[in-house]
Image 1 (cartoon, rainbow, N blue to C red):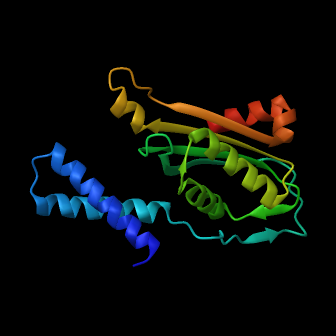
Image 2: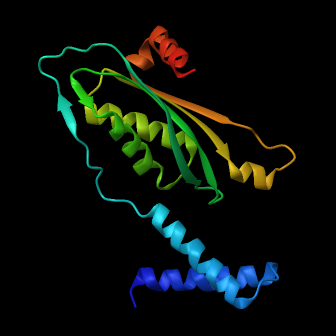
Length: 186
């Protein structure tokens, strides 16, 4: 039996025991719930080694203005509580010459959110990845998130929405560009 299979068996046994102690469900129901939960977590956290990205360099087209991509949905798992948080990602890219296919921004968000992470880390990872990959003049990322850990652990006083931002390049230096991005995200 491989290490992953052994660890999954141990996790399955521990989760089964926990659910048996706190619910009145039958052993068969608990077994099915345990398997389903661990299977879903494993699928969510299993990542490809690389993101397949298709770049298109437009030699005859000069585009030196920002590009805004709004409302990319994501769901991730909080590294502190192992509970989901979800929301939307807005991205502003000030290109040099490499342009990324619009659907690839969703692929990047999906890939980087498949991890145990914090919203703050996810925001920085997305911005840095796009900046480095495209060699962009700058990238500005704004993420809004609803954290289920806040709802479950603090139901009387949970936050509605958490907003994080991260900027690189010209967006880090030029507040007017950053403000323009924020206006385009509204």
